Image (tube, rainbow, N blue to C red; front, side, top):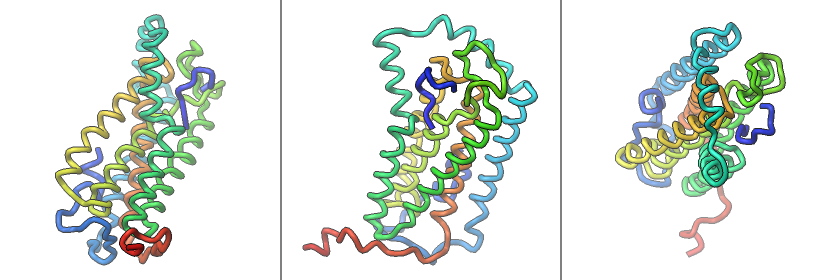
Amino acid sequence: MSDVERSTPGLPDAGLPDAAGSEDSSPGTSPATDRPAHWWLAPLVTGMSMAAVLGFLTWQVVVRGPAIAWDWPLHTYVDPRQPEGASREMLNAVASLGGQRLYTLPILVAVGLFVAWKQRNIRVLVAVGSGLVTVFFVGYWIKFSLARTPPHTGVDILHGEGQAFPSGHTANATLTWFLIVIILFGSRGWRPDRRLFRRWLPAAIAIVFVSGMLMTLLDYHWLSDIPGGWVLGGLALSVATAVLRLPVPWPALTWPPSLAARN
């Protein structure tokens, strides 16, 4: 779900159950029996909270409420001050690498495949897929239902030529970079480690924030589209972490054979 091209009309630690990590787990393990009885509670509460905030922001866009009050003033400020030439290309590149699906999807899938191979089961791949499906279907359902015009059209109307709200670019960034940290260093990840998790979490937050803000400063999105993308990504992240914690026996991967087996 990309929003970078103008030609197209168009947190985690407190709520995510895998955020804490496990210092006693070893890399490559796939624990299936050590989940607490209420393993579903944290992702359920987080997911419902994200869904409620997303619903509120969507309602604000529909009724033109206070949550979108800064959209037009910010657009009128940044529109005549757009960078040009190499500066704009550089900023576009940063924004694209942060959240454009053309780049984030291969990165997330590659990390998921790596972790699945190390753990020798498909649990991580199912979690990644469930998060991507959530962003795609929920995001496009809202986008097509509202059809909000983007700021570079010079008008802010619903049911027009656009898919501005919520920002799919920002949702992709939120899901991708937080989920990568979780599946690498969270308690169900490749190398569960609280220290590494806490070290890389701020980097994920910075990427998500910068890529989202660039979409507004480069006039691709209204300001209110960005929080919409954040909470949509948070909703997808809650679904993915719930799948990671499902107390079910996951099919083991027998191919490709591990290096140890070949040796």
